[in-house]
Length: 417
Ligand SMILES: Cc1cc2nc3c(=O)[nH]c(=O)nc-3n(C[C@H](O)[C@H](O)[C@H](O)COP(=O)(O)OP(=O)(O)OC[C@H]3O[C@@H](n4cnc5c(N)ncnc54)[C@H](O)[C@@H]3O)c2cc1C
Image (cartoon, rainbow, N blue to C red; front, side, top):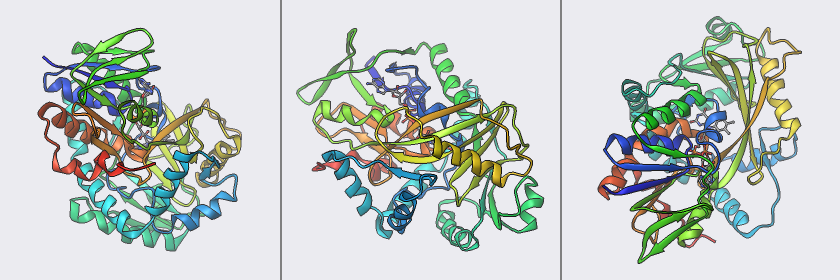
């Protein structure tokens, strides 16, 4: 039986390892730190395939300029005069047009369809995790922004997503009584789900280990050996591991593996923060997105998580207190009864893997026949983990790229600086 090494045990690596195991493959997962405990543990946990729009969008450049001036805004770009980051930024900026946005939106909407069914199957197969089907409520301070987004939502309906229910004024507060009067309206997408992200990664880890898949923590891959356009082994500081197939699923750390095999995988880190309040200081019926401040609020069994912010500042665990403070302030401002003196028991940092066009990078790594990549999921890693896993496992085990993956091919970065 051929041996597949998965580099990176985040939600993408673990999910794909599970789907490979379901197909009978011999899989080994290597993680530099502790599998599951990077971005995949600290996110909002939303499974929201209808949010299919890529981050680079028409109008974002103008909004970003405004946000850049405000230290409490949801976006920060740390100036870095590094050739590959500047090339990444340039491609990001070029992707902020209607044609690229629409193409990315459609490809993501098609890819994301079916994600809930796969997650339901995982639970039947014995992967245990906390999942809620109370939907997702998008709430707005700005009436025009809500109308614009509701109209844009029509774009996913042809792909089989249900129409959301708009709620204006008091109807919004009747539906979710903790929301403050400062919010003029919202809409509820009842099909979307929320998982407690740590339970998802630990559930996958436990299920894999029960099935005999080894997950080696503290095993950073430092080199990939290639011979005749085939990966023959990976190296960690401790050992050389021969293999027949490699999957790069190292999230924001994935770019280095492209370099090891001579390919371009331009993936940057989009840092975000998660603030856990335990027990929940206010009782919510469902997950809420405060659109204007870009704050995600997730009620888990164990408490409430507020998350947000996008910092393009490279890979680092450092925290910018003003931005974390802005997330906390936003939650307190828009949720009635949130005590002013409530403090998070934990503040997390997570690095979203971001490609410059905002789309996942899924497929065979150019120049090598037996290495694949599954990364760049940006704000949708949890949402797209299950569908990514199924499609990537099919690709790895059959050698055929499924049609649904073609728009996400890493070939699109050939010639990138
Ligand atoms: C604040 C925040 C909120 C978010 N909310 C949501 C949400 O509600 N819904 C959603 O769908 N997505 C959300 N996301 C995005 C989601 O968390 C990510 O897209 C997803 O976790 C990426 O998963 P991953 O497996 O690619 O990466 P990671 O979870 O980062 O895992 C990568 C793994 O690779 C390992 N690794 C790195 N280098 C090496 C090496 N050399 N050798 C071996 N292993 C290595 C790391 O240790 C890590 O464990 C959010 C993200 C943030 C930060």
